[in-house]
Length: 162
Image 1 (cartoon, rainbow, N blue to C red):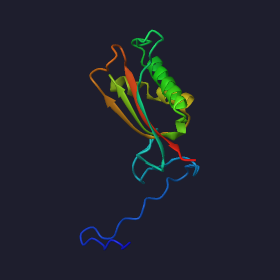
Image 2 (tube, one colour; image 1 turned 180 degrees about the horizontal axis):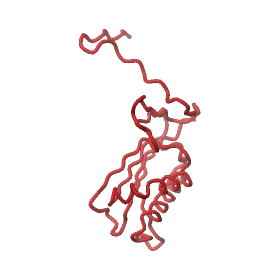
Image 3 (spheres, rainbow, N blue to C red; image 1 turned 90 degrees about the horizontal axis):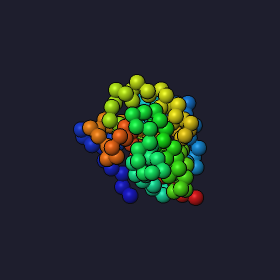
Image 4 (cartoon, one colour; image 1 turned 90 degrees about the vertical axis):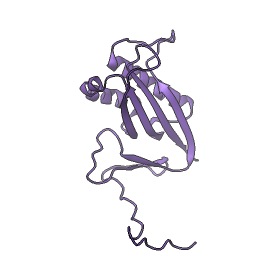
């Protein structure tokens, strides 16, 4: 294999970024958090680099009651807890653990309400999924498929190869 010659415009390839300071990530897990110096990362990682493993894509989870309808209408915190609980159950059924999460997308119908309750939702996250915060996006939408749903959570995880 021949080395790539330095580009006249951009110079040699950049060095990989250093590992985040003060974070411990056991080598057996399938990811590495990337949080460049100077970029905030409270409650999420700016990027997650995954190692080889089994990819798990989790469909959007909501707070659904046993009747198949949205539980706790109008209660964002209760719906967030239900959706986080469902996410944890789906991960377990797929053979994954919360620390295998590499990407999470939160869809909410009211970003301002989410911001108001962000600390409480963070406590619910830690109660259901622990202290690992993957790459995460929050998207405000006009509505969700299930009438009355205020939050829906989709995720991707990588189960490490043995």
